[in-house]
Length: 476
Image 1 (tube, rainbow, N blue to C red):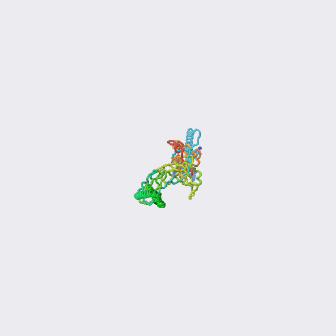
Image 2 (cartoon, rainbow, N blue to C red):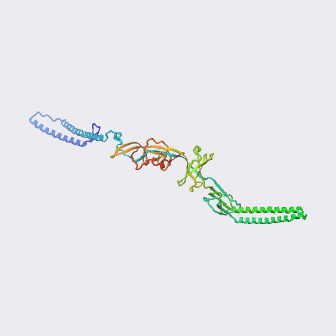
Image 3 (cartoon, one colour):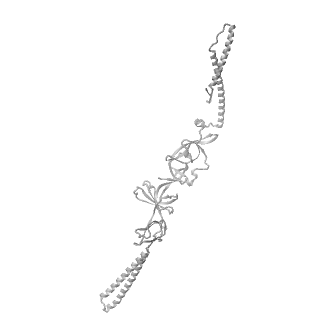
């Protein structure tokens, strides 16, 4: 049997009475009643002997005495209950006095607010930060190909002659006037010698013709020869002179051809292409040189964004090793290409880690803008979105005998900008006075109770100007 007693302070006292104990008392009372009845009968029998006014025993007397035993038991239980209730009431009054002394202003505790969460413990101890404002770079990101800014194609000036030597390879830096390859000079030297012999023969012929004219002219005055004969000698002299000039010109051509057997660089730069091969008579260009080694980054930009790009605008191109190479926009194509994109060219600073043909990512530096920034560690990715874990309903509680500052987790969806170091720009407007979990947010869920602890060092983003004041935000 359960007996419940509620005192004036609405405190509940509950205790149990074993029914088997009551049954035992009932039996004991019954036995005692039977004994008393038997004794009464004996007494009455004796009285009958002396007095004929004997009255038989009432059959309800036994039941009446049993009821009396129950009533006595219940009365005892009630007395015990009243005493315990008074004890509890006095104890509650003493506890209220103690609580009032500890909290004289009557500040509501968590027990007063929600008795269901009295025993709730924080799931995690977290460090918190506040969002900071920094000047972030608004960049337009793109991918592009590295191309030569200016090139020079070098062909052989000797026809019908095979290449004898190749002195450079692709990627070599060459200077203006440097020999790159040699043609077979043996046959060319033979041609020069033949031309020299022709010149010598022409000179001799011219000298003889010139002497004949000088000899016949006096004879004309003496009428020893006719005018026609003298003219014939003069014509032969002129022809010999012309043959001499032709022979000398042929000799000069052969000498030039011999000199052209050396293929030299017309400008300084990098060999980007080589087709020259030993023993092969070339049919086209032998080498291609990137003039000055100057390269460009060519990026195709959406026409809707081309208005943001201006000539001379700074550009940053990142190599495969993470190195950033600076440049400037040098030209913009006036018309879109077949892919409906507009090509933008940016001249790059000389760097040995990039080569023509590379596909590299880059950014056009559009300017700066004031934006909120948070540490990268505060961002939690989930279901393809980015979130910040905010701490709301911050209050102080007494948990396990210790005073702790706790709060509830609220997941806040954000749109991120660019990243610079360990800081990231946030495009979304973060609520004013927001308190953000600095790290380990991926272990938390909406509504979790967390314990707020002080960081070991000031983790405020504003105290890291090398990162926070120069983050990069995408302009795409």
